[in-house]
Image 1: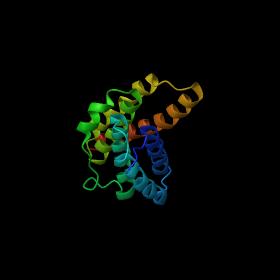
Image 2 (image 1 turned 90 degrees about the vertical axis):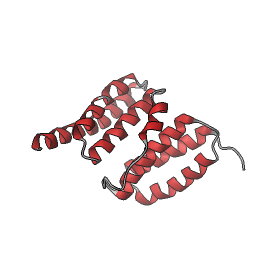
Image 3 (image 1 turned 180 degrees about the vertical axis):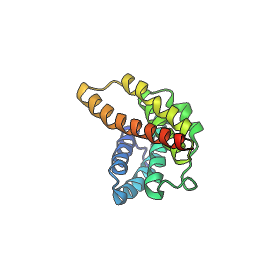
Length: 155
C-alpha cells in the first residue's frame, strides 16, 4: 500500500465539500467513498483529518437531513486541531453553529455564527475571492443568526 500525500487527500476533500454545498447527492456519496480511501492511506496530517471530520458532518446533514437524532459528531477532537489554522477555525465555528441550530440550541448557534466574521477577515485571500466568500458566507451566517433570533423571540 502506497502512502497518499496529504495535499492530494485534502484536494479531494475540497471537491467532496463542493459537491455537498451544491447538493449533488450522488456525487457527494461517490466522493465520500474515494475520500475515505485516500484519508485512510494518507500520511499523518491532523489539519486534513479535522477538515475531513467537519466535511463529514456536513455530508451527514445533506444525506440525513436536519434530523437532530441522526447527525452528531465529536467536536472536541476537531476543536484541538482547529485552533491552529484560521481557515479551519472559521469552518469549525460554521459547522459547529449549524450543529447547534439543528439541535435547537439557538443562543449557542448565534454566538458561534457571530464569531465567523473575525476569522474570515483574518484569513488571507485575494481581494476578489474574499469579497465573494464574505458575501456568500456572510449571507449564510447572517441568515442563520436571524433565524435563531426569530426562534428565540418566539419561545
